[in-house]
Amino acid sequence: SGRTMLSDKRLRNRFLIGLGLLVGARLLAVFTSPLGLGPDEAQYWRWAQTLDWGYYSKPPLIAWTIAATTAAFGQAEWAVRFAAPFLHGFVAIILFLIGRKLHSVRAGVYAGALYALMPAVSLSSGIISTDALLMPCLSVGLLCLVHLRRADLTGRDQWRWAALVGAALGLGLLAKYAMTYFLMGLALAVIVDAPLRRSLISLKGVLIGAIALAILAPNLIWNAQNDFSTLTHTTENARWGGQSFNLDELGQFAVDQLGMFGPVSFALLLIGLWRLARSATRLRGRDSHRMTTEAAPLPDGVILMACFVLPPLILIAFQAFIARAHGNWAASAYPAASVMVALLAAHAGKAGWLKAGLALNLLVALAMMAFSISPGLAERAGAANSFKRAMGWPETVAAVRQAVAKGCPTGGAYSAIVTDNRLVFHGLDYSGREGMGAPLRMWRRFEAPLNFAETAYTLAPEDDACVLVIVARQDQIGLLARDFERMDPAGPISIPL
Image 1 (tube, rainbow, N blue to C red):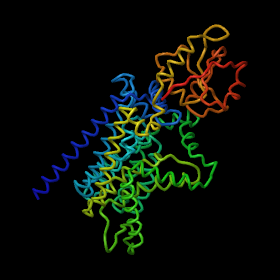
Image 2 (cartoon, one colour):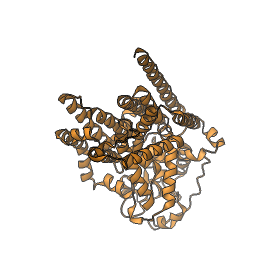
Image 3 (cartoon, one colour):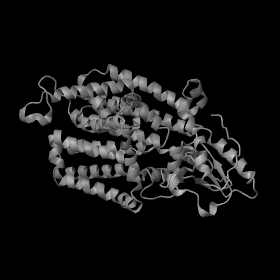
């Protein structure tokens, strides 16, 4: 009816205005935050100084993005992070479109709000990370799949949406190899979703794979030319060689997910997955792929979204159990999880708990922005430890420059500054980008490099003279001493954070 259309239009406009205000507030926090780059951000900044098809531990899209924003706005911290709030805001809009397409405007608003306000996104909007590049690709891929499964599409439209799925998949793999979870979701969707199966098990599926491979091919070639360093680092991160079957790690992973999606939102997700599991036990005969129950059919698209939620959650939980896992390794589950929870709430017509969860997540988002603008406020709230890696680098650079200016105790100038810690290296590298009086180098503990700095910035033959060694780990002094003819203490550098 006309009244419903007007109501939907108002709801959509309110969502877009609210999202715009949120993105604007996050951008303001990025502009005004006194926090320096964290070491990982500084590493990505360093990559952006030399554009390539791949880097030691990540595909190239994050370096390309930073190169674009810093070329436009300069090398300040806010310029490095500039794209993050916009990228996450874009994802919220795409998820709104998915929810609206599958169910209603209300479902779209719920989906976009769930994503935009989830605590992990509040954190990620204030830094630059590979997840900020991955999520847009993943969400666009989901939207294109939702269109592709429509039975009323003309042949030309089907080919167009299939091509866009392939492009999203290829770009996602250039952002982060966690985009492979999207491939796993596709495999599950082919099994349980008949309309999508008819589209994918055809030449359209071949087109998706061909376009994705064509986009990824330069990165694969780069890996082949560089001893497959990115792929090797990604697999080594799993550390499957030291299985411990650790229930503590699994429990910590579960707690981390409460913090990632929000405690109420994650509880609603688990309830939705439980409902889905109950539905799976009531499958009827030859229509089993539809997972329809006689009593309460699930809204269209819930099963499809679950196909993209389950692989990262299950596999990273298993990874946590047998070795270790960081909470954000399962981040690729949450665009689809936002849509899934939204569909269930809109279909049931009861969203009290969902709104309560959104209100809680909004408070967390406001607190994170306030803490990034005022680290002193974070300290008073007991949250300063979360920001410690982004603090104190300019003061550290000043102290190092002062030590270098004194010159070598044996006479002459220092030929290099060496550190034993990659986090210290990248913090000094960015904050001391205008020069520190000597070139910055990374000490390599083992024969094979373990990180980018050890690969590209190890001691060179021309550094074989007097060097200033910055030791972050006191227990490594004995090992460091073996690589030099003589070591003399130069005193401590202590920076209060």
